[in-house]
Length: 70
Image (tube, rainbow, N blue to C red):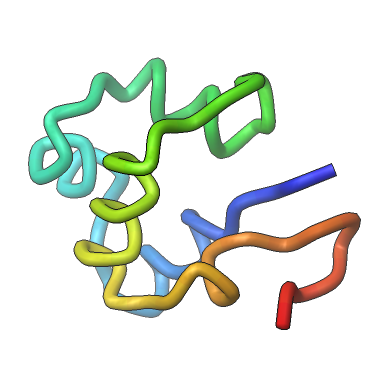
């Protein structure tokens, strides 16, 4: 199962979920669904924006079964 390290990356940048939602033009409800793994798909645009605003690569953003993807 894929999981996202969004909250950890936000803490490193000292930013809030609200800040990320405003920059990505996404609702907090949808962001929380991604964080909790309640989505079955995510657009490439969201992946690109997450990496851009969190200043990270895909392998820093996504874990596969609790292991870093690399």
